[in-house]
Amino acid sequence: MFESAEKIIAGNWKMNLLPGEGLLLVNELVNNLEVQKTKVILAPPFPYLSELSKKLKSKPGFYLAAQNCHHKSSGAFTGEVAPQMLKAMGVEYVILGHSEQRSLFGESDEWIAKKIQNALIAGLNVIYCCGETLDDRDAGKQFDRVRSQVQTAFNKFPSDRLDQVVIAYEPVWAIGTGKTASPEQANEMHAHIRDLLAAQFGKNAAQTVPILYGGSVKSGNAPDLLSCPDIDGALVGGASLVADEFIEIVRSAEKL
Ligand code: PEP
Image (cartoon, rainbow, N blue to C red; front, top):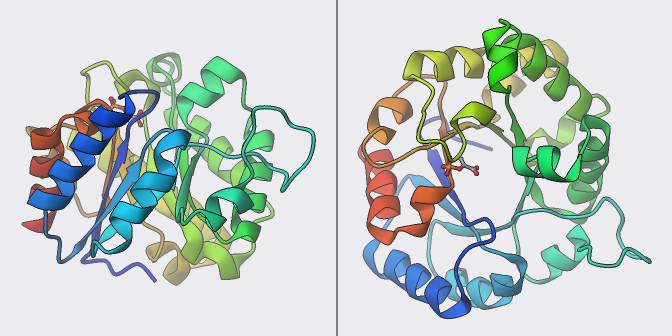
């Protein structure tokens, strides 16, 4: 179960870094970071999972994530990866519903819900991403958008599997843009998500689900965001590719 004193800092490398660069980065992190109360999750591209799995196995507080998976366990799905394969390779988490998968590859909430189901069956923990577009926010529809995403994703969700879930609130307008949600904007959405979970699973269960913020998190804004009461950590894209930046973000979580 998630302890409320813990923070999670996840680095989503996306489709970046050649193998040598990835290795250099992970060595920097492993050699320079000791964590006591922060979970550090690294999500490299698929081809690097095997190598990182070996590296992270003996490093306390570090975990490995994949950036996606399919909703079936095997079959004629060229180019896809089953969560069962990831689990067998030592992967512990999978990011699902990222806005880039939604917008570039047309992933619907229903499709993502199927992936969540199979990832759970495979024994993976899911980092489920949700968040509104700028149009949604300008129209004052950000809470409706996130409600519909969360409700569809967790519609048939077994409550005894909630300990396998992390939610990442990532407003699309803040991803890779350098614009960050203010701590107030982020915290109020996190509280909204917590209320949605409470309505479905009960108040106590909802408290156990970590809710991360993602969208242009950097060492400079991390301390303010991470100190908000409903923000349990960060999903970091661009800044996770720069060792010093990512180390600083993790250290600011450790200081809380
Ligand atoms: C992300 O892609 O999940 C993300 C938050 O990216 P960035 O930190 O670069 O905005």
